[in-house]
Image (cartoon, rainbow, N blue to C red; front, side, top):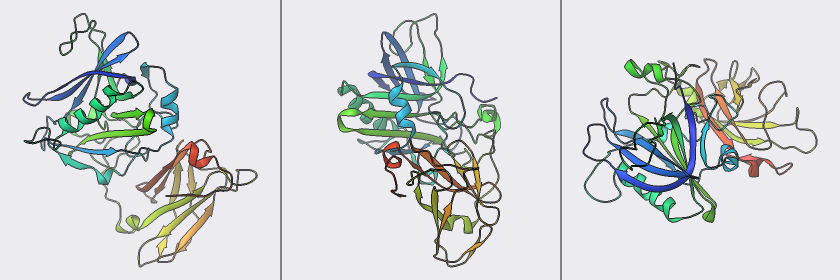
Length: 330
């Protein structure tokens, strides 16, 4: 069924509460968005086993979606779950490498070593800077008749599911969908820095179909050897049929590219030439203009096997893509 009210909340951090002893603890964040208060409820432990969450912090997030986020006013914004917008998708959006996520406990003795500590560090930093903004992606609730049970503001309302929302099995399968993942992104304009905090449950699949359901598939070893290493999004003259993408075969064996594809930020697909790429060699591909394209305002590109499995993905910003004739290296 997917999420019903997928949205992004933008505002300033007003208060926080760390839960450590509850059966299903959350890190609670009170956010002020103009004259309206909201609560962000961040899962810090799973109800399923294993209970520890996986996380990654991207402390220098450079992605095209940050341009769209800056343009939003403070407040709650419903999102369409589709590519090309600011909706999050861990597996298709190329925000980070999901294989680099690590397991973290919600509570551990000592400072700066659990998920509550991590959330505290970034939200307190945001609260201390007047210009800072927090963006919470997930599903909304409220407004409620009663006051918020954690911070007491009226009416109670907020946003939860601040984690990956696809790849679920069992009773959580109904929540699956693409381009509806949760997460926290913090902007610190004084330092010109974007920070992304992304969470997932250990039992969620890292490859999903177009409805967000798990795929029982493992990328072939040969797929792990192929990488996108460069792109030319803004060539001199006309972009159409002049944009290029450079691939490398890192392995010690030739790779047959027949059936392989490139997918862009709008899910347009460009078939690769049916040829073998020798071991250790690079291949510069000129896009046809009828499939994947490289937007000058920033975008993303994924490399897919003939089975449609993503084996590598990259993204670039408007700043990286605007200079005519310059190639972006990944």
